[in-house]
Image (cartoon, rainbow, N blue to C red; front, side, top):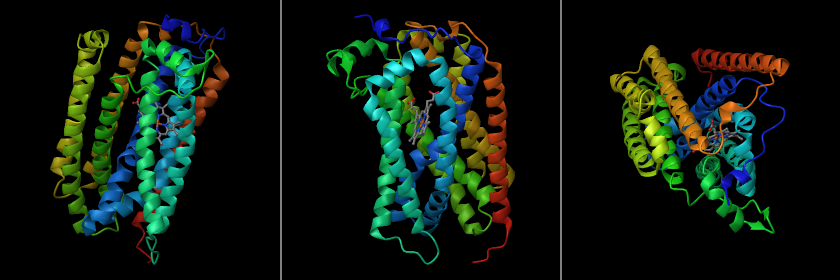
Length: 376
Ligand code: HEM
């Protein structure tokens, strides 16, 4: 069977905006999603480990991160909606068949996320002054950490299956009854799956490290100078581990699983420049953190955060090129007719900018609160 028979039919409505617009917001939205997502993907597990086995300063770090986590999750989930919408608009012909094949695991994400979110809240009630971290609260925290890993794994399944069209006929046949898909598939036989998920975890460790510096330099006004010094050296170690992890998994992903098509294009001019920048990018925040290992300054902490945002942006752009090359064998997502829908587009832009404005306003409030002298 030809996999193209399972691709969704083109919509007679066409794209509501030019492809460049859709893909720009898909990539920007994913970059914005990745920052907070990394903090819960790798950060929750690390925070639980350090809360249990870390030094006093490490426990302080863990409590700081987890106390902020509910807001971080709210931000990251909302930012995730942006690339999801643009994926559904521009990649619907492959996104929907893939997520129908794995409908139940895909749907499960909402349920797992609800439990993970509650778990964080329950754990954090044990961090309040005079509260006790009971066994129940600690178990809730560990369950959240594991659920975030599992949800990340399901996302990696979904987005790798979306471009693994060669495997669709076999997956469909083995998980359907009388032609009707049961929706129970995963993309486990795809060699890109594991390095992709693990590579994202390595990158997530680097984001947690960069955020540690950002938090210590910008938000942690009431913490001791000792904590801020500790944060600098901890961030350097963590970034280094994340970098090595990311590099090893990246090598496995690129040289062990990329098709010749993808490799030929990503290693040829002009995309080679992007590939090299994506690989070397994490070196910039690493150097900035190295510089601050003994003393974190507010300005450099902000620059570190921005540099990490740039690293995530480069990853999102590279990944978009790879996605398009993988799909180009079957469908040209850039070739759909455009039937411009101006009013929803304008409303989207206004709400997007207003949403970012609200986030900036919230951050400003947090900063102001942190600058007030402690009342407790
Ligand atoms: C309901 C909330 C969420 C939404 C709407 C959402 C949305 C998305 C979207 C659209 C992408 C792909 C972006 C692209 O390829 O352009 C993505 C990727 C990803 N998300 Fe989320 N996300 C959510 C929650 C989470 C959670 C809780 C995790 C847990 C760790 C997570 C982990 C990931 C990972 C690891 C990827 C990369 C998958 C890969 O391509 O290998 N997301 N998310």
